[in-house]
Length: 414
Ligand SMILES: Cc1cc2nc3c(=O)[nH]c(=O)nc-3n(C[C@H](O)[C@H](O)[C@H](O)COP(=O)(O)OP(=O)(O)OC[C@H]3O[C@@H](n4cnc5c(N)ncnc54)[C@H](O)[C@@H]3O)c2cc1C
Image (tube, rainbow, N blue to C red; front, side, top):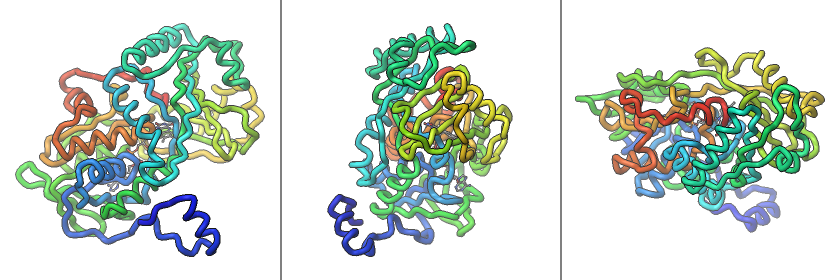
């Protein structure tokens, strides 16, 4: 595939953009692949990419029932950070952040990574204690974060009201390297690179069954016919339980709707990402000027990609006290995704009871930021049978009580 460059843009500009190639092929499935990845979200595509790039495994198909990036990957609020409390989490999220920093160059695709800084507000004494502890944990992990006072916060975010009557801002956890990226571009960039390596990205093809023989995977049934494989990666977020059931095992995943909304575009007013976890609201400003807003999950399990309406009101109401200007904004669009929650709010990257089947799920409300690190670790696990990045995220930790408890850091806080 021809490289994107400033010269290519100039050349195509002169010939009315008639020479661009398709970004990826749309092939029909082959009879057999070495590896099949189910789910063309960010995690599935990144897994396939690093299988090819790091291990030379390119006889790979990525099977997607809808369109690529049409799941949670294209529906999130794009927050990227690595300021987690537990060591295994900090390791995988920081690996992801490091890869994000050069992802546009690596993929030759502009993912619009914007390390504008991220602040998690402390609005209760409990949060002050919790985030100061996280700053110290991050220092030990080599992840640069700092504690900022309300006055420093006000300088960083002039539109913030630090003297709210219910929840005054008492300080914040600040990660300067955190930020955002363009979510669709992450999926498109990985898909293009996979296609360039000869992998088949097959859209509009639903996996309807998993075939096993003697406890080992041999293939899948799909709406485009049966396909054989030696290894299968299940990377389907909110549909993980459904797919695991096809293969005959269960996972501790609950699927719930999480939604987000954007306002009308306004002049630049906030150049960091701010998360207010006590009141369940977080906000950043997109390059177009829209305020991108997210809140908490629905409180019951469901598979609707919408989310319930009262959450919009709750989220906006929560933000108004801390950001009074929000009360004068018109909201333009709202959407939802089905997130895959585990009990300890940490992901599962694991072998399964079926030989040859690997699972990557449980990223819940916060997996966009992890995509490159998750793909890197999952590819290593699938290629070599072990990865230091994923070892602690084994599915059997729930049976053994070895939780990686990030519920405070990641329960609803992306
Ligand atoms: C509103 C919202 C806001 C969020 N905000 C953030 C944030 O700010 N920061 C952050 O880090 N994370 C955030 N997240 C979480 C993040 O989006 C997800 O953790 C991440 O995108 C998961 O990626 P994935 O590749 O695992 O799943 P997905 O992108 O959902 O991909 C899974 C794919 O599998 C496909 N699939 C399912 N079943 C089948 C089948 N049977 N056959 C074939 N294909 C199938 C689906 O169609 C889907 O495309 C948010 C999520 C939502 C919904």
